[in-house]
Image 1 (cartoon, rainbow, N blue to C red):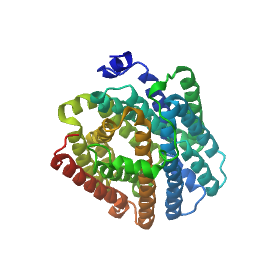
Image 2 (cartoon, one colour; image 1 turned 60 degrees about the vertical axis):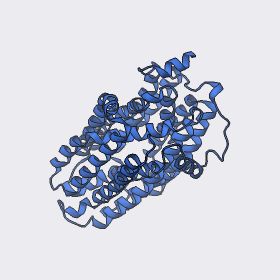
Image 3 (cartoon, rainbow, N blue to C red; image 1 turned 120 degrees about the horizontal axis):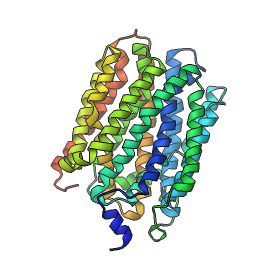
Image 4 (spheres, rainbow, N blue to C red; image 1 turned 45 degrees about the horizontal axis):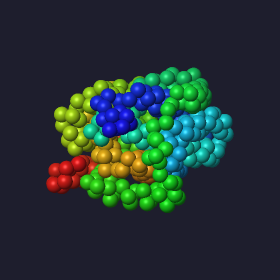
Length: 413
């Protein structure tokens, strides 16, 4: 057995994973900084709540469309040239996008800037491929969960800081996010080693990086089947929640950027606890399949309760109660990763990112349009929870499909 195989077989993550995890943390920190204030920045160019919801949906959707087409290309490029250069390119593009957002003077310029940002928005898929490169198949859920933990840690720090800065000046979070991302490029340039040996790289072809071909390929992976739909529907529900949260809580409870930052802080805490501390033992005891099912069930219930909540404090309580939901995504990704050849991890993770991107577009347009339709209802109205009810319904469908596949399918995943 060669040294790389021994590393992959270790029960502990290799030391070099720390570099990519820190890179992911700094990346998500930058994203988290702008979440509480991006809807307000859109609002500076609109005059009514319904128009703010529509244009915010467009700003988020155009980013997702570009990510859908470009993430598989970036993933395939990382299979050809290595993870390191592609990851650094993505983080640099993110930093420049944050900086450009401080200069926009109209909603149309904002749409263009976000479209450009979506071109290099493949960093999470490349980071996932990096982790898959250096982790053993039996350890992959835990390893991929570390990325989720860094995601959670970024959300612990980013939204709170973004909320505080946003109440001082709406552009301050964008300046800080740009600084963090560009500093991350410098850090990665000197500290991030390559994870994919030259001998395991594969040629790049445009046909292999076609997002539609990649999605079709996912559906035919060994032992995966309907789980592609489960992943897609879960992403739809998740992005509906993410893209309507700030506007919905503002309309329903009159929340400020600071209050939204605090709520996302709790989301980050819950994610970090589950994916960074408990996930390894949790999945080892229950298995990936049960982790997926329990997570989807928890999310279905809590999404419904989000819609029913008539006091802001209830949202904080529900976030904490939903901790088991954060195990579902890394467990699903681990199932996909084990079904993919080691030479195609980048393309596979890029295809998953593309699938998530197209779901983010659909969820954003559906969720913000629905919110715009009910925006005239008074504060505290249950109708303002309509996007959460839609997300809960979709999550129930995902849970049903997952149960059918994982319990009735005789093949073990």
